[in-house]
Image 1 (spheres, rainbow, N blue to C red):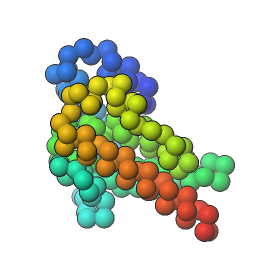
Image 2: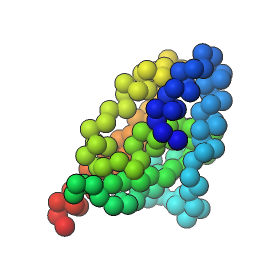
Image 3: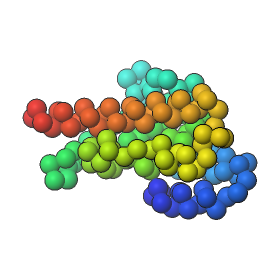
Length: 144
């Protein structure tokens, strides 16, 4: 699902119970993460729930690596947050990933008021991990 469609749907829902249900539904749309990808290398540090993030370079655009992410979590709402984050960052050039600030989007959705501090920290950790993967892909591209 595209990020714009998710935002539109999310903002249509006034009640936070409905928004949480929507996040859970989003989590169910995630591309499956194979069992072998639930490993220590893919585990995102700094999340209270377990979160795994797998990164692949799927091609390039104007000499920039394109990164594809798959993710999963052992918590339903967090899995939805993974889906939302991947909709924002996956299948984009590394430079665009590094330049995209998720904070205004998360603020617009009201996450600062409605997510627990642990979930907010986990969300930041996930975004930082994605940006670190993009920076590493850029650096590898320059060396190659």
